[in-house]
Length: 95
Image (cartoon, rainbow, N blue to C red):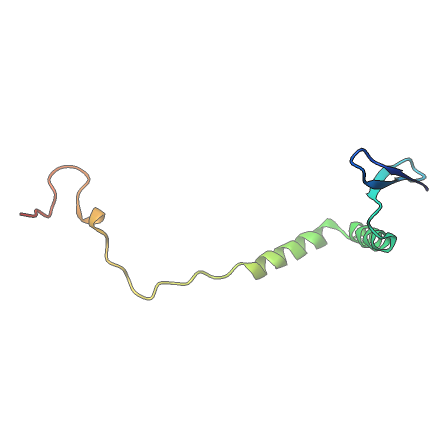
């Protein structure tokens, strides 16, 4: 694995990493190397797991976040739009 350090066009220091298999990656130099190593270990560990495991975790998280809807304690009366017919003479005549 080869690493080279250079300054990008936006004046940020960048590390270019080329693996033995030919994959190229660019990393911001402000990120500490310990954090990159930890992130790489976690990512490679997660990629070894089957996809069903991550889907199961996702379902569990969704189950925790959804809350049951509160049911109404009393029935509400229908509004005036339900009292009047759609066409024709209204049922209630105000004089």
